[in-house]
Image (cartoon, rainbow, N blue to C red; front, side):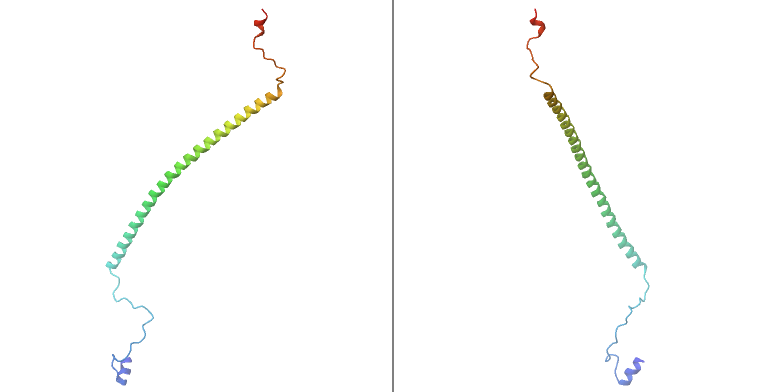
Length: 124
């Protein structure tokens, strides 16, 4: 039909501008071959290998961080133990000082006479 219109007007195929492009993509004349599928599989294999390498590296990094965290945990535990010992020592010292202060307040020191010589040696 298009060829008949051109011939009536006296135009050749080269003189007429092409029509608009179709809205749908052109269909493939040849179906996918095994080469295309093999190429896709090989690219997928390379991508999976890179991913596996990165996962292995991540595992090594996590083990390193785990070791650092264990070291920090040991230091914190040691500090907590030291604090508990210091608090216990402070409580014991405070109790001893309180007891001595109470004894000093209760005992009438002015009535106590400390004789440097024992009584048995002076009665001879």
